[in-house]
Length: 167
Image (cartoon, rainbow, N blue to C red):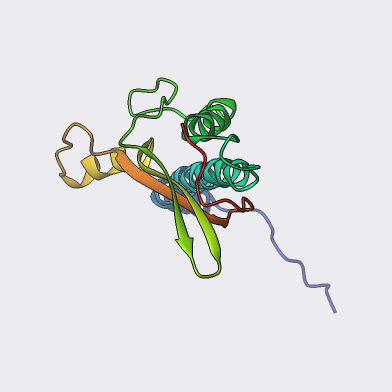
């Protein structure tokens, strides 16, 4: 009885099929990869914003009376954190917080004083995903790739006086 052999060589037609399949699926794989990178960077920037508000709230909550850290110092702490992590504005320049983007408040409750540090309208530019829409007949408008993020942290203050820190 003759041994059965398996022919492992591909015929030219099969090799062409593999090339065609790769050509058809490669754009979809690149879109998925680009989307994962864009969304990963978006998530990272959101985490940086949340950590910046957390650092500001932590500094504000550990104040030792009204002579401690004021709103100007809390804002500087948040700004330093954003600068350290190279957060950019919509034009690609280092982000400088404006009065409309930063807020620091405190509230007296029955359980104690709550300190709130918030960031709003922080721009984030998507790099890859908005560009893919043009392949489907979408006409891009200026600013289409910009999303606005926000972050907010509330902490219990450790000061035990009736007057919060002044600026």
